[in-house]
Image (cartoon, rainbow, N blue to C red; front, side):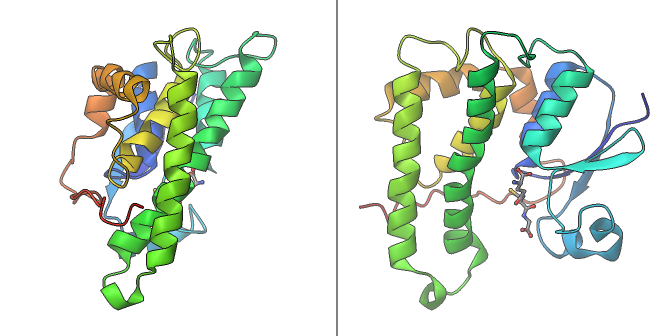
Length: 217
Ligand SMILES: N[C@@H](CCC(=O)N[C@@H](CS)C(=O)NCC(=O)O)C(=O)O
């Protein structure tokens, strides 16, 4: 196995890959980037053509997309955090792995509206309202699923990492206090050393410095 390099921005989706690498307890090199122009450098674009994170260098090749990185890492390290083909939870593991992006796209849209767009006049009240509602609905589904459960599947797995990061972002835009199962699950996740370590700033600025509840219906 060749060296593993993870390209990461503080609080970005690459938290998922970082947290997973910590949980897998494998050696890797962390390359931190600022969220912004640094990702558009020629050097970085030669690795990730869209200039996004995460981007994983492994086996001398580049792999991007958090879902693919999660599947690949669980597979090559034969980890119990994954659910291999034949495992009764394989189907659900894949479902929640991809559901993490369903939650994340609403968070990304709200991040764009509240944080990336600087001028109030350029923001859309309609988009903010719609996206907040749609995000809240995705959280309600998780809250229902977590009734009577400690984790999304029979025990802690990589999908708790993937979805957990999405909910970390979501809570900057939606109050999650009313979702009792979800908040209890998030508290359990925050007790994991890998999650705590993956949220350490490491010299780069945070994307989420505020809560933005103002535009909820
Ligand atoms: N579906 C992709 C999304 C990657 C993505 O959009 N990452 C964001 C950070 S959360 C990014 O790098 N944005 C920088 C930009 O768009 O300039 C994944 O899961 O890896």
